Amino acid sequence: MSVTLKMGRRLMLEPDFRLFLKFAYNFGYKGMRSVQKFKQRLKKGISFPPFLYLSIINSCQLRCQGCWVDVSAKRQMIELEDLNRIVKDARQHGNSFFGILGGEPFMHPQLLEFLAQHPDCYFQIFTNGQLITPAVAKELRRLGNSTLLISIEGSEIVSNERRGGNDVLNKTMEGLRNAIAERLIVGVATSVCQTNYELVSEDWLRKLIDMGVLYAWFHTYRVVGPDPSAHLALTPEQIVSLRRFVVAMRRKLPIGIVDAYWDDKGEALCPMATGISHHIGPSGAIEPCPIIQFANETIHDEKTLYQLITESDFLDDFRKTAASATRGCIVLERPDLVKELVQRHSAPDTTQRGTALAELEALTPRHSQHLPGQEVPEDHWLYRFAKKHWFFGFGAYT
Image 1 (cartoon, rainbow, N blue to C red):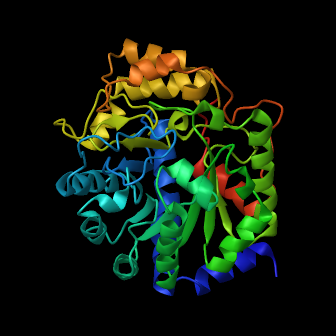
Image 2 (image 1 turned 180 degrees about the vertical axis):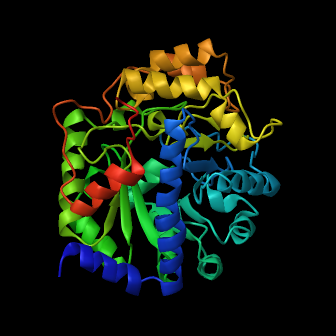
């Protein structure tokens, strides 16, 4: 049996079948349709992202290295009424998928109520997993319209160091087991850095498969924030090695492997620069992406979300400048350009700490995923086809 058929079999048999159907329709079919609408808008010179990422609260019980969120500051969160308004507005333009971030999303007191009010949408919840009790997992199964992406950062010792807590791995694994016991669609994410690079291995993926994890996301550590911990950054050679590993494992193992930073040809890209996603922070600020904490528009302005994004000179200039400067991450490669953009548009700092501009000035330019001449094209027909037509690129770099 081919890897593709094995993966399809896992998706249909391991999670609750009703959850699989919701995933296939609300994320798969509707997601493709929302991208088609996005491409149609682009032909008219209108950019409204088909996928939105919402950091619904800043609070978190962990203190991760390199975190750019003000997790220790006074609680900020997007209220339920505003969350509903965001989703309602985006749905009018074809959107059905939303990424839910924090802080720790499960610290939002109305997260489950929010999910319940949008059964025709699909949500990917980025979480440390420690608040996923059996009761929470059971309710997520009843609702059926979300997938959990649980962060695992390495061994017990590394997890405590990386996440700034005690007994981090065991608490996270308990949440993971609770989710799998309820037959939820569960993924595991790792911010790959110098101290946890050993997770980039076939053995680790096989362990995830044995546990019942259906997909993995290896994303490279971003040197940003008030304490960027630059010593954790991957070398260019490690970035290429990670990419080769992901491509190879897609052909070998029945587990979905997500990446958001390369297209079907293996060329680097930035989801923000392509316009396929933007970010709304816990204050309601509409930002280019989660690590760029400046904005001229917020959800509290009088216009609709669609108007705020499509009419934003700041977002438009950011997309065009990023795409013309690099196919990779403009923050890592050209922090000077980010500063220039912010100052050109007089975009306020959206952090509570108020030091985002100084943090930019202190960054040393470094390589991101854009490494010309070292492209690794997609080797699996399904990933290659999906990336080419539905999820990335779309002429941003032409």
